[in-house]
Figure 1 (spheres, rainbow, N blue to C red):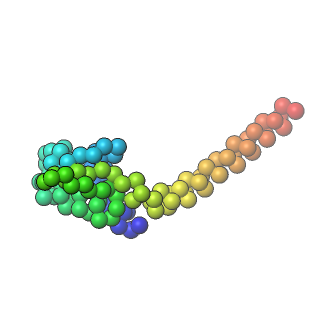
Figure 2 (spheres, rainbow, N blue to C red):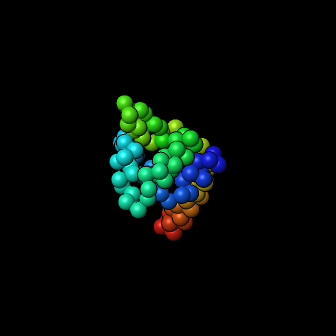
Figure 3 (cartoon, rainbow, N blue to C red):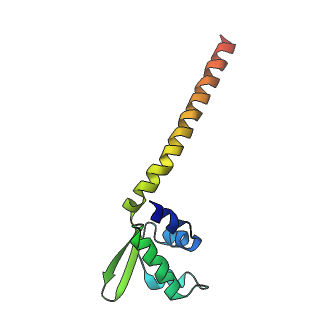
Length: 107
């Protein structure tokens, strides 16, 4: 999971993930979206994302197509869900307490 955290800590990689979320793009199209970054640098970012399992690469002839691999986010999702679930439970308890207090005032 540390590899995934390291990968998404880099802003350009997060931008790449947004580009290939829900669609498949060629490496050239991804690189074209970053005018201020060299193609080799984008290739390196793609390699990091691929090696940690956040994107998949598919070769068609000489082209390389990339898309998000949802299964690569499983551990990250579980990690963050633990915090989210805890916060939701606290919110639920607060709402229920408020409802009980409101009911008590009107009865």
